[in-house]
Length: 202
Length: 264
Image (tube, rainbow over all chains, first blue to last red):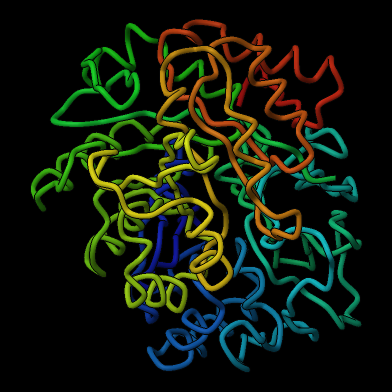
């Protein structure tokens, strides 16, 4: 299959920086506003900005739910960023109880910590040295901005962790599905490297 | 462990980036100057975040659009988080700022507009809402005056603000900007922190007065402080921020140590 990079554009929030990052890496991404077109992509990025509730509402009611699930089940590469990663799980409680895509078990719940919330800024990721982490030193810093994180998972996934009052899931990987709680497109060169490694998958 | 932050702020009005001294603005150059003469791209390798603020009093819709257009060009090759603010007064502004590159938006004069703040919280989440207060010393009463509209109009005293608004305002972080120290390079106003209760659970950032690396270190060394913001284009010209960053790291400040890759 020819390499086609799509960035899901549900019409919300800042996806320009994801676009700029992919373009900077030498690819020609398409901002995809129509769910029926997802099939044409070899690599899809699901960015997420805004609340879990708003993203869930748009995905559920504007016809993205089935096409996204179909895309993931087809085995093509997908990378969810922040809420885009959270959406891979069953649901979340930010802004009420809302459904995710349910690819993995687990839900997105608020941090239970006395530390400052939201967790904003650069924090280190302990990674699993899988191929998407090629050339990225372990415990490098990536940019986070969130108050909720995944819990209650029991899936057999390669999780990476970050510590903020507790050890939480900051990166997921299973087969063709990847997701980061942090923003690689905001994390200087090493964030770009992570995206580049993903986009280079054949 | 979560890192502290060094944030660089650009002050923009009418097509130019400005230096500010006690909130009096001085034009220094346009976008082209910033990129080619200032070496902005290189500077961004050593900051944790970028902040872009429209510092025009009561800007029109057109002012905001041309501001966003310049920011759009600026951020093409900049891969750091960006906070954009100045002049945000309604939902359309909020939406435009996010669509044009804001990871977070910055609200200052309009944080007292409950409907606006509630709408931003509900639709975008409060983690993407930064609030800024511009404070001027009120020596007589051991307090500070919070000024709005680019420092032109008195709103209320800081102690009153903390009592009335602070606990119920939705926000992800607060930036405390010192009008007295703004642009004078004499150091950050650390005294103001004493007025804030220890119980605050949101990140506090200090702005105004950082003129050399030592000032950034002293700010970041405060337990209550998550980050330091500087808008001083000239004090940290060239490798200024790289040096400041290294010094802070050497003195044990918990900052991210960014790596430049030989190739991407």
